[in-house]
Image (cartoon, rainbow, N blue to C red; front, side, top):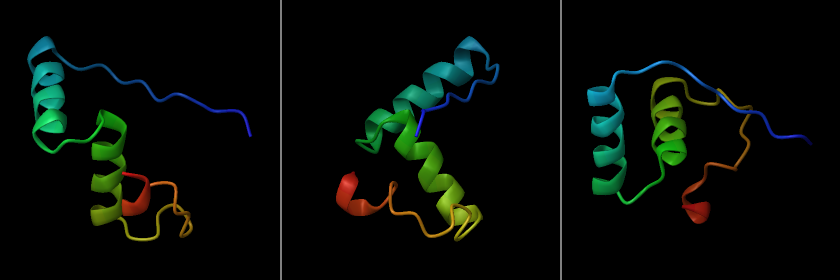
Length: 56
């Protein structure tokens, strides 16, 4: 399946804060965002395990 990208505008400060949080959590920005979706919207991805802890 072809991969897609998601883009949205953030300020320089927001960008730095996101990067620092990801670093603190020892995750990529993608992992951080997908984890947030998992917490806010359980089963949002139809139980796909791409974001599972085993892959982190």
